[in-house]
Image (tube, rainbow, N blue to C red):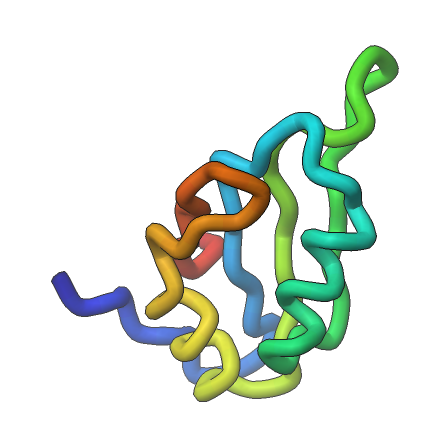
Length: 86
């Protein structure tokens, strides 16, 4: 299935879910930075390092599309769920 189209203007943000709770933030951030991410934002909870999700920001729509196309890619033993954030 084709990825939804990226927005016509900023922000260019992907929602990443299904991140293993044991995955170090640094490993997740490196994964996305190697793919052109400008920043990774983490919703947090007091009792876990992260909630299994993050928001990944890109400088342009093409980088966002490439990221969303990686939906299902395994990281730290779990398939990531990637979509354009709305």
